[in-house]
Image (cartoon, rainbow, N blue to C red; front, side):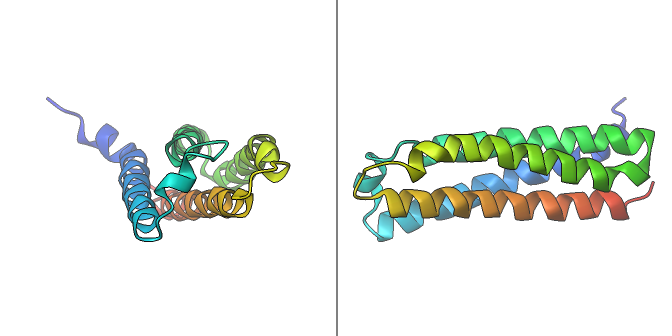
Length: 136
């Protein structure tokens, strides 16, 4: 018999996966219509790698927050802030080559990197709010 409470407990991870795949598809379609697909080949990090990096970070953060919630609901917010700060630091290290790049398309790549960062930060924030509001 399948334990539905365990499945429901990890539902936020599935939500992140669905939201990130949807955002990636929309981003690729936007690149297609803006004729940026050829420009993407010059990027330090292809769009897929950027999304994959932030997806792994987001799933890790939410998984840890779910574990923290099991122990103490009051520490979920602090855990979110700490883990997000850590993610920002790691993202800054990855963004450093983009910022210092001499590519003529570095502005587009930089903007895309931070757009993806903002998308995932929004997704994580919404999921964390739902975790905090679900006090079961």
